[in-house]
Length: 458
Image 1 (cartoon, rainbow, N blue to C red):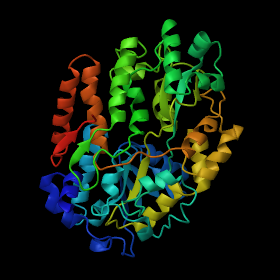
Image 2: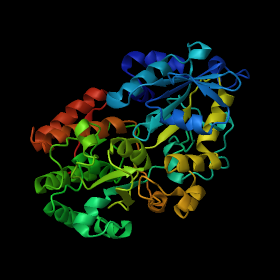
Image 3: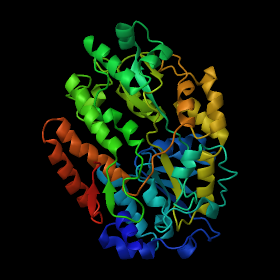
Image 4: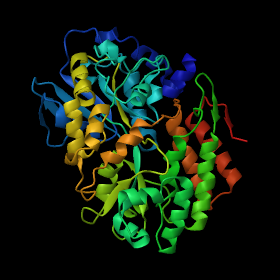
């Protein structure tokens, strides 16, 4: 089990290094040290966490002109090490740093690193021992994090229920739609009325036909719906302790439904996947795409930058199915020489209710405070100019309270990426159905050499 786990965390060539580099939390001047270091190294894939730290952590003094260093009032410097998430680059760079953690100089040690829901399980595994239990920092999840949504605490915990990370985010997803298109097709742009038109998949399909008749696409891409299906899987992609990938029927339902929607003309065939130029342009004012499925971060970080019109054109309503998309988890790295600073930062950004409410107000972000988000849902102060004065928290809050997180595994990111890549080729007509399955099997074993078999639903 230990050898398999490390094979997931790092490549085989790094195996010896990780055992030496990430041992107990008190080794090599780690959490047991009483003297704090002068540099806090934080690994992430974008500047979102940096923005949140600089917005709410009271010890921040200034940031360098190039944005790579944040200086604290006591002279300590936060160094931001940013690598892109795409193609596993971020994890590769992080894993290399973790391998060298035991031998690294104090100012080079990883102090905090972030993970996403798709691969958080890989880093919270107790045997990997790279993310410290929060209790080792002096953070008590039962009291200090009592106001967090339960599913986020579960997601940040190891198999024994020991919490090894925390997040400022809760990422319930909604349907985000164009008011002008709704008016043209339905005669109303009211969120409650539109919500009835998209309340479940059967109703949504009938609505998609209405939209098509008026010359509109329901969604930009087949990839836009994947998270809703993926959040519904019954079993994890890989059962702990095993080396077999089991493709859930819900994933194949996504493939089959996507093919049906594409053939019916409900999706734009020219938009192939997400995070590309065509997808970004589908969010622009010249687009014929009616809606996107986004959590709060998607509206703030993705939709708004790609929208070239004025405020008030977009609105939110309930999705056809409750889902969660994403979540950035903050981990204290085993071996950090800055445990007190790390503790302060984690508490400031993920546990302080006032700070969380400030983030929600300033960034329209749905944050990880159950009591705070319930209040925000009924408070006009949290209305969004971008959404034409609508309060999105009114819709986010009930979705968040009903989220049941899909079972996780250490292989989730690769499975989620590669199953979409392989069947994208099928949906685009480049390969047949069986060839797409074979391509997934080949790609996933290349990504994870310890995988021995892929099982498909009958």
